[in-house]
Every structure is written in C-alpha cells, then in structure tokens.
Length: 440
Image 1 (cartoon, rainbow, N blue to C red):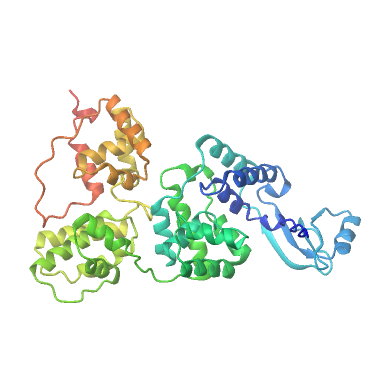
Image 2: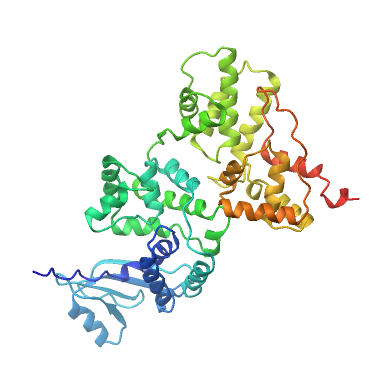
C-alpha cells in the first residue's frame, strides 16, 4: 500500500528568516543536491516583492474563504494549501488581516535581499562552499556550553534527517561521532527551539554583507552570532571541558590535567612550591597568549594570576601585561593574537605594500620573523589555513624575495614569558631590512 505524499513545506515562514536558507546553502556540510535546490530557492526569492528592503509583511493562518474575501476586495494575498481548516498566508503588513486569522506575525525586511542574495550566490559559485573551522565550533560551545558534536551539528545547519534511522546514523558517524546521550540532547535542543527557533539561530549567521563569510574569521564571527541567538532563546550553560583543553596544554607544554582544571576553574587545589609556581606561570601564559581570544581558560588565568605573588617581579610584570592585553584586545572572539591579520591589521597592510605581496603573505612574513619558530601546523591553526593555501602563501613570499628569518637564537629560559604578540610583530618589522626606510 502506497503511503500518502508528505504535505509540501510552507515557504511563507521564511519571510524575514531567508538567511537561514542562505546559511544552509553556503555551509560545506550541506549535500550538493540540497545545495542546488536551496540556491534555486534563493534565486527565486531575490526576485520577489518580499525581498525588498524596508518592506513589511504579515504571515499567519486563516480559513481559505476569509482569504478569498480579501482578494475579492482587491488585496493581494499569497496562500498555501488549507490544513485543518486553516491556510498559511502572506500579505503586506499594511493590508487588512483576514477574519479569523491565527498565529499572525509581522516581519520587516532589514536588508536588500534582492541584491544581497544574488551576491551570496555569486560568491558561492566563485569561491565554493564554506567549511566550519574548528575554532568556530569551539567558540560556539564555549558560548553555549553544549557538547562539541552538538556545536558542530548546529553550525552545519542543524544537520539531521526526518528519517530517524538516517538521522541517528548521521549524528553518530564522522565527523560528529555523538554518543547516544549526545544524540538525545541534540534532539531535545531541536525540540525546544522548534522550527522557528532553529531558523532564528541559522539566520543570525549571515552578515549584512555576505562577502564577510569568505573573509578571514568570517565563519567564526558567524558562529559567535549564532551562539548569541541560541543563548537568547535557550539560555547558556557553563562550559565543561571535554578533554580538549587538557590535551592541548599537555601537547604544548607537557603540563598535566590539573593545570587545565585550574585554568578553567580559577582555583588551585594545593599551595604551590617553586616548581608549581613555574608550572602555574607557564599555564597562565599559555591561556593568555597561545589560546584563542575569549577562551574560557583566559578568565581563570587572570584569577590565578592574583595568587602568583611569589613569582619574580619581571615574570609577574610580563604575565600582567598579557592579562591586560587579553581584556583590551581588538582581536575578534575565537581568533588568535598570533594572527597579525587580526592583532595588527594596519601593520599587515604596511608590510604587504612594502613587500608587494598579499595580506596573507605579509601576515606569514611577520609570524616567521617575530615568533619562536612556529611549526607549519601551528601557523595553519592560527590562521585557519589549509595546507594548499599555506603552500601558496609561502611560494608568494619566496617569489617576492622577502627576507628570510635569521637563524633562531638559543631558546629562552623556561621562566621567560614573551611579550604580547602584537608588540613582537611591531618590533620585528621595525628592525626588518625590508622596511622601505631601511633599504639601501
């Protein structure tokens, strides 16, 4: 026996929330077949009256005969199939409301979607879909307190399926790898948000100028906006480490998990001896200088710093300098101080002009000259670069005959704390032979 066809989806509810479709269209996780359908919808939508900036529209449900009565009086009303005695409708907000209407809502179109959506589609065609970087996933979970798989699923456009078997398989497979409890939590969040709430969260991702999504840091900024919308609808929960902070601190400095816990809680479990003081200084410097801006560890690091009064004065001064920078930085949340594109953007422009290279190449030049022999993998993490893009930027620097870094000096003593990255970039360029005023 054949099943009845599923009722068509209502499109009127996208009024004022078409950016939710735009996000699903550009995010790389969307299957190509769905992407083509969504792109076609955006193209059609951009040519409709409800794409015009400043226009106001009412959506709701009403009996079909009441909608017909308005049409008979000369008012334009778009409507869908009637269900349970009510048909979804869309009309200009200034027109009379159909009698017996329910669930009415009014939306004013803030942006000019008639030009904005085609621009987004052009960027998608020219530059390709956008993968969600790890730092965007991290920022979302820091802001909301949700588990990493849930953050990734939400940023991928509330990935899932109406078929529960397919949905369960997708959520529990790579790249999400959610366990059964996380799957249940994700579905519960979706239920609490409802379709309207999910559209609100997704729509928050898309900026006024779609090109910002393809710019450095664009996807992380989108995740920040989505997290703010999520928190407004559901509230937030405290961040709980899933082991990633402990693993990163161990990999970078060989410190045990107790220091990651201390950073995230701002508390020391026991009094510190001399070795413990040094470990604490290392952990605090790591949280303030090597982690993304607004990492939860930074707040705890500033608290811990108040307890490290027995450190040598110069070391304490250096740590306080990092702490001050962490509260005043202009680097966007989720990005790194060690990425000159964000920490010293004007200097990057100067370097790019002097060397005759792109801003990315100028940023890499500063990193190689100012920082302590960063590995290729570390540079890619700081800059959110792929291996191919990193290789292209290096070739550009080589072709421009940019000065190579001098042979590295012996490593500093373990007790030393580096100056804030923006100061190191400025100092490195001031002493560079590539500066126009220092050329022979």
